[in-house]
Amino acid sequence: MSIYPDIGCPTAGQTVEPGKYACMNCPHKDNEDDKAIITLDKRGKLPVCPVCGNPYWAKF
Image (cartoon, rainbow, N blue to C red; front, side, top):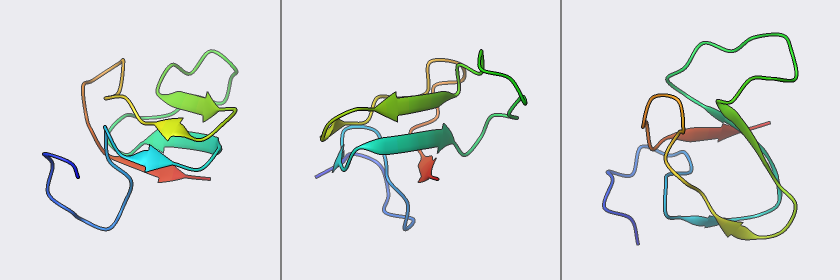
């Protein structure tokens, strides 16, 4: 259960499957140094975005 409203996308604190997740608030760069994109190697909990503090993520 998350403290954030359910808007249909993964949120901080939610346990999710492995994969790449991008912050839904930040603009994204076309390089490997984009800190608003995280990669989970195993099932785990999402953090808040380290760039803007947004709790919402999109999996791609």
